[in-house]
Image 1 (cartoon, rainbow, N blue to C red):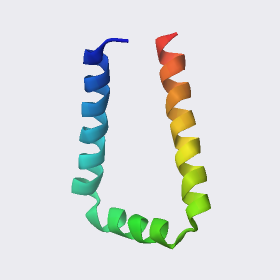
Image 2: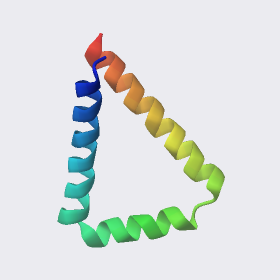
Image 3: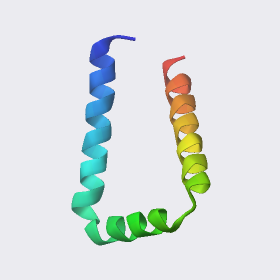
Length: 63
C-alpha cells in the first residue's frame, strides 16, 4: 500500500464524516448523545466491530 492510498482513504473518511454532519446535524447530535449514554464497554465493542468491518471491506476490495 502506498502513502497516497492512505491519504486518499483518510480524505474520503473526512468527506463522509463532514457530509453526515452537514446534511444531518440534528440526527448526528442525537446520535452523539446516545453514544455518550452507553457504557464504555459497549462503545469499545462497537468500535472494534466497525474497525473489523472496515478491514474486511478493504481486504475484499483489494484482493
